[in-house]
Length: 154
Figure 1 (cartoon, one colour):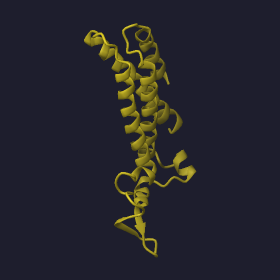
Figure 2: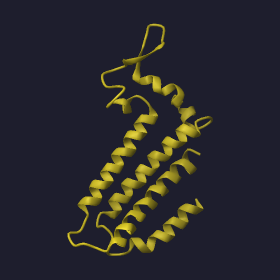
Figure 3: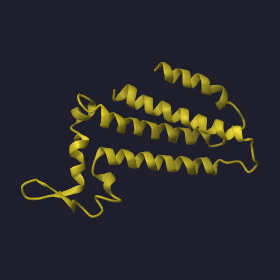
């Protein structure tokens, strides 16, 4: 929690500058969400035992991977036979928590790039303003990750 407060205090003066991307707030919100999703994924993978995931009945990753494969009449996993069309490739995010959070994380990163690009001003600015833009987004991602991994799913 102390690290979150320090990051916010350090970033506040930067956020008030006029040279930042005009969509920096939107991009930062997307990066905060991406960090939160990534933190939830990492907590699921590495802090599963005794966590909310276990209490909610979400299968551990060691078992969840089986969700993309069909099962025979005895309940055995048939690796190589998809449970539903594309369940082991482009629709794998529908099968388990790990893949759904990876999917969300990647889509949020892609959305951030688009929002940032649309907010780019026509005039060029000094290179260090781009570094500051990305520093703000990195801080937002870090806050989201920490909120998820260190606080909610601890």
